[in-house]
Amino acid sequence: MKRIGVVGAGVMGAGVAQCLAQHGFQVVLVDLGADVLDQARERIRLDVRMGRLLNNGPAELDPDLIQGTTDYDDLAEVDFVIENITEKWELKQRVYPRLDQICRPDVVFAANTSALSITRIAALTRRPDRVIGLHFMNPVPMKPSVEVIRGWHTSAETVRTAEKLLAGMGKNGIVVGDAPGFVSNRVLMLTINEAVCLVHEQVATAEQVDRIFTSCFGHRMGPLETADLIGLDTILYSVEVLYESYNDSKYRPCPLLRQMVDAGLHGRKSGQGFYTYR
Amino acid sequence: METVVGSRARSDIREFIQAKFPGARFTDSDDIFGLGFATSLFAMQLVMFVEQRFGFQVDNDDLDLANFRSVDAMAALVARAAPAAVEQGVAGGTGA
Ligand SMILES: NC(=O)c1ccc[n+]([C@@H]2O[C@H](COP(=O)([O-])OP(=O)(O)OC[C@H]3O[C@@H](n4cnc5c(N)ncnc54)[C@H](O)[C@@H]3O)[C@@H](O)[C@H]2O)c1
Image (tube, rainbow over all chains, first blue to last red; front, side, top):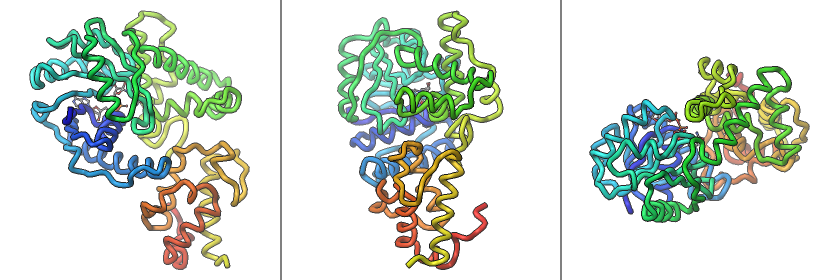
């Protein structure tokens, strides 16, 4: 595996592309517009510098390793695909049949989704045995482990291929079964949503909620600071996916979360969420 | 050793940190990461702030957490890397 297709160049796609390139892979990075690809390039430049600052990593990245494009046909020659587009079923639903047509039949598709069922995504293709979930953590280059999700039809060989790619990226996988939200987000999204409810009900401020997690529990970050890092829009979509998938009212999104997303307060990436970043 | 504009740089940096963490108590020599309120992700915001405010690009070799651990360390970096900015009083700008 040398050339990897990365679909979606947002927070996660840019991070995945950066991490792949830093480990010597060629990357074809696909998004909808040139402006998004430019933003991704700038994000990668900043994150490479951050890696240098925090971990003494390399300060530069060979720009030729990442080919940005808006043309899906450029994925015809890739050996593996990691899909990171917006967490909305209606959007993902249209992408997979297209990838299925363009990519070689032996190519594995990895969905980097926060909560969508891998089995359901796999059913959009004629290669359900070669579809797997790779739930990367943010910021991708700094997180050593990935939640790997086996869909109903995912073959053992596909799991091995995905683990090989992860090893090549300096990461290891924790393989779990398929359920909406998997392990990580079934717990985390509910926690964040509940934390937003506490702020909404004025039981505590965002700083207080976070300090209880950092100072009392010893977590590195509180749930609301984490929400800002993930992106409040992504949180909302993930909670909505859980709600729709389980038809269980415990996953109903907090009205404040929805309102902040409507108001354009998407967290760190927009400069404002529960905290200000400028 | 400290010039008037140099101390202005120092107070600009201190103000920036204080604005982000209104409740935090720290001296100019304190390790703000060691005190626990500033996370490593905040470090990159410090780099960007210093670059924008003092009009220079932090060199790859200076991209080291040690240079951003305290107000003192950052002021020293600015004085070393952007003496012109400090002398011309860019640090005293409006900072809009
Ligand atoms: N943010 C996180 O911390 C995090 C962590 C793990 C997984 N995820 C998952 O990763 C995926 C991406 O999340 P993100 O935070 O990067 O979102 P984002 O909003 O930052 O980026 C999504 C990108 O997808 C692009 N896009 C939308 N439709 C497309 C299409 N048809 N073809 C190509 N590109 C398209 C958008 O233009 C945008 O640039 C989501 O499924 C999310 O749930 C996010």
